[in-house]
Image (cartoon, rainbow, N blue to C red):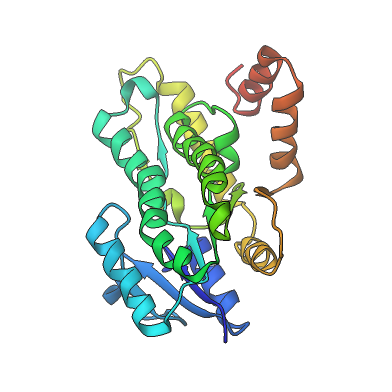
Length: 268
């Protein structure tokens, strides 16, 4: 019996790459999208699911169970980007980012746990971000939402181990996807005290995404983790510099690391 995999945000970017890779290796893959009827090029079925709508989460999971009689793997991939000076970022947009990047994955997990508990097994993989390991200028809300997910999963994993359920966090760096087009940008305001620094940093961030790695890297890593009997709690996927930045954060004095980040974004 092939493993049954549910991927949130499976219509583009990393989610689509993972779905295609696993489908080619005989997994039974179900992706999700808020508007699956608009996607005509998916090589695996897409179900309607909005991580901000608990009813749609329950309906999609019920549909998978009805069609496949089980769910072996859930990949929490749906997420949104957000940039801007925190002072100038509307509270409504901050809440939206946390709803999608934090509350959404937690609600998906809560909805699928009863089925996995019944099976006595299951694996939940959460796509977080290397940005979640550090506060980055003009990306602080995004970093915070991913950091919150990382820490919550550490706790949830310990709570659910007794049921035979595994949880894993995978933190990607920059990958060449359409996340920049879909994220919320606080506008670069003409009279803003942050105008110059934020404008330059935004340009740098977009270049990093445009020149990012191939999402196939993430797909290969996800496949490897699914096939690992005792996977680690945390994995990082990105350039050597991006992964090394986490090590430096741990070992360098705070202000030294801060200066390094400021220089990296041309802010000092």
